[in-house]
Amino acid sequence: MHGDLAAGDIGQVVREEMLPLDRNYFRDGATLERSLDRLDASWTELSKHLQGDGVAGVKTREAAALTATSRWAYRSALARAESRGMQRRRDKPAADPAFDCLFEAVGLDTVSVHQRAIPWGAAAV
Image 1: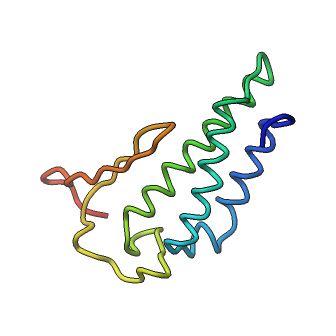
Image 2 (image 1 turned 30 degrees about the horizontal axis):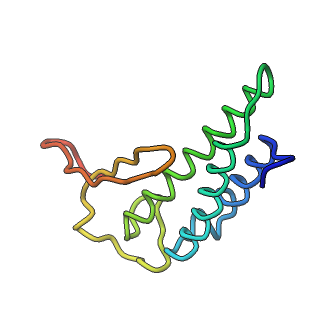
């Protein structure tokens, strides 16, 4: 993906993985994994090859932000192996009380998701 790599190429990958309802709303583990493979590859290429000054630099930072956010969202969706709120998993159609918690996605080159207890007194959504 390098050589003629441009921020627009990365943006297109993000759109292809995040916008279609069959990938982002009607989710399942296998589809999330395939999307993450593409998003992770885009992040790697972006990190290694994409730079810029001025307007090109702004577009590069925008592509990085979109890719990072997408990767955090999909890693979190995989960690929450249930359907709840806006998360609809075809492979996990019911809510699971084990996931009455918060999820925190962190990292850029390597994204990890940590499960956290809901602070006392806060309502679960």
